[in-house]
Image (cartoon, rainbow, N blue to C red; front, side):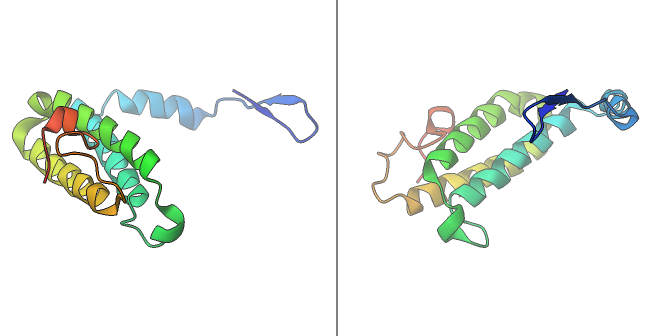
Length: 125
């Protein structure tokens, strides 16, 4: 991996032994864990972007939230049959919460059924 340095030259960063160990370790992680971890990251980021964090005045960005919610809804919808109802149910609850928070935060709300993620989840109200 190379990174630009302040002097304008690129410096090659060697791959650490930790990185190669991480690649081996990922082989030991169950798919359901990888999927739910990715979903939780998307959910957390969406919550921040809809203004559900410590500093909503500076962190709220509904355009970014829309993208994150769409990605989250697509992931949950596609992965639900693979990750069991127990995992999918809690992710769907979180998704619904950020969808409703998005609707509440919008100055001009999307029509029912056309909000972020509703293409995959159906109307949320």
